[in-house]
Length: 211
Image 1 (cartoon, rainbow, N blue to C red):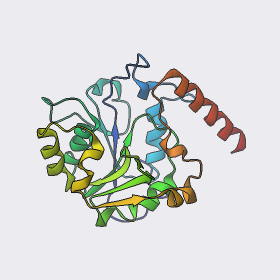
Image 2 (cartoon, one colour):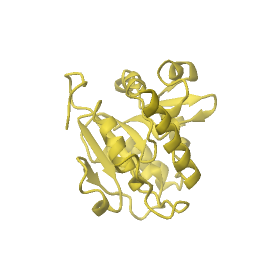
Image 3 (cartoon, helix red, strand yellow):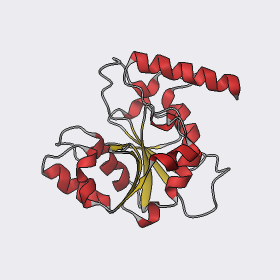
């Protein structure tokens, strides 16, 4: 991987969750064409700016074997499918103390915002963007200390990521902080429908015009 732009410190890791069924799209959203490359390849290129190790959590590894990532599957296979299982698998697959977790359908990541959040990651169980009461749990840092809490949460039948936040020490990144690095909050745009995809392509086209 290209390490240019990264601080020379201990290795840093990111986890991409690509375990969703993409029912509304009818095909794996991570493989959608995004200006000549797959959406997920586009995201990996951005993440490589900040991270030495990128782990992809998926139950279809054969779709992604051309990517420069480490691939793992869910470890809690008998439980209901959920992003919480993916976070657990990603954190469990590495000895890194904390990692940045992102969904596979968020094409407008802002490295400066990710770097700003990273400053707080060593001292908290999680670092999560939050606009009022609206959290961004799949654009967040999680510590390995979360692993046992997640296992307990899932064993009790609770699968929503934010449901276990009350058990964590969290540094919330508020809207004013986000605005310094991503005033339009494009980092949190995700693609669930064909309309979302068309809008994302339009946003990317506009960005390319002005770049």
